[in-house]
Amino acid sequence: MKIFITRLIPEAGIKILKNAGIEFDQWSERRDVPQDDLIKICQRYEGLISVGQDNIDKKFLNACKHLKVIAQMAVGYDNIDIPEATKLKIPIGNTPGVLSSATADTAFLLMLAVSRKAFFMHQKIINNEWGFYEPTENLGIELHNKTLGIFGLGKIGFEMAKRCAKAFGMKIIYHNRSNNILAEKELNAKRVSFDELLLQSDVLSVHTALTAETKGVFNIDAFSKMKRNAIFINTARGAIHNETDLIKVLDEKMIWGAGLDVTNPEPMRADNKLLQMPNVAVLPHIGSATEETRNAMATLAAENIDAASKGKRLLHAVNPEVFG
Ligand code: GLV
Image (cartoon, rainbow, N blue to C red; front, side, top):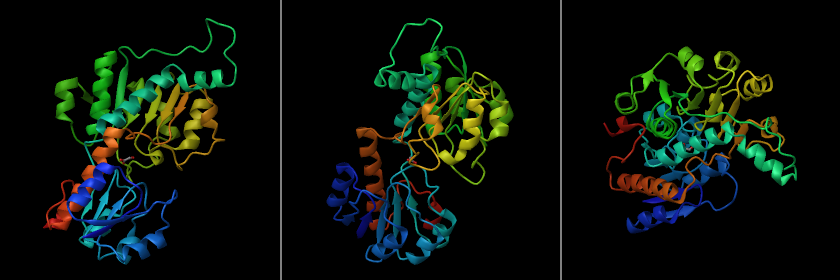
């Protein structure tokens, strides 16, 4: 099999492809492959490793229906039209599990950074504004024994909940379509309605996939129901919150702060108002960005390709129904 890879990926994945005798080429330019170019390129390949947010929509899939596999090097796949891929019998792979810890660490980092205004205070030093010690200024809020609300308690949400329960004795509530039995057993997590999640959370952390159902759910209506001292964290997808509404509720002190690893659009512009706010911490979508995790993701993506090249089921398929 010969495949195309839309970014340079870690050596761990390359090694697997080489050992499996899979030929590959990589996009090495420091910009996304334009979709029309990717369509042309893919005519010469049987498989694709998609990295980042390549637009794998109906147009792409129908122009590339010869592809035997598309392996996404990410857990999220909101950039791919899964029903269309399934209709065309193209297996789509992703990389769940291996990035749960690193992504939860990022959510935890943002929560702490917001609670102590860490990024803002760091910026003050850079601006030469580490001035007079004022005991009533720049105060944060503590997290001990507070309530963590998880929106979408899957693997990543579980890791975030575990960290918060163990480090700060936080009470865990969550909103899901179904119960997470493991979290209920191990972390005493309690499933609540969306409204209860908004009303009760001191920290509300988003860990759901971006779907038609979750797009923009954190809007002015939702934020208005949250506590005035609540912290909103999003490490999932930027489109799950409405940024204009978030800026408004922070400006008007309707919630206490926000930590974002994801924005809409990405990259965020440097003049974005959120970046000037003391109680806000923003990171450039680095949830899974550790050496260990990126190696593991590249490994899994390459293993998915290897499986497809041998006519086997993918290790992690988003649409396993294509295998009949
Ligand atoms: C990163 O955002 C991913 O979906 O893996």
